[in-house]
Image (cartoon, rainbow, N blue to C red; front, side, top):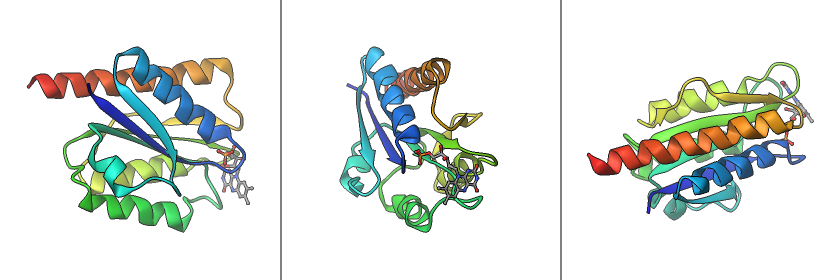
Length: 147
Ligand SMILES: Cc1cc2nc3c(=O)[nH]c(=O)nc-3n(C[C@H](O)[C@H](O)[C@H](O)COP(=O)(O)O)c2cc1C
């Protein structure tokens, strides 16, 4: 079964809710999917994934350094060529998802365009979009596995 791994940094639960909706979307397309807080995510979780979604809220116009480091370390997790997605909740400027996508692309992940950004708490329609992203990731993996 294709496997989608979602890793997030979320301080008040907004980005976490998006992560959970991505998981739900991927599962609805018969993929195995799981979301991890980035503190708990191990390189082995990523290595076993066919697709990776990474999300963070924006802080001081950036991503927090530990998340930045986490993404940089993924270059050792055999991620090149895999489909991916970047997402996150934000308040007023919302740079994090774009910065995450840039870092993911540097290590060869094929990030779906556009990134998914939601202002503050996701509304029902935002969660639907996040589910859509999870479905798209699952479908991309299935296509890759058929090749
Ligand atoms: C200390 C602090 C700094 C923040 N800096 C930014 C910022 O530079 N740009 C922005 O768009 N939002 C900023 N925010 C807003 C958060 O990104 C926003 O509240 C988001 O919904 C939090 O999502 P989370 O619950 O997933 O962490 C900041 C919030 C805090 C607490």
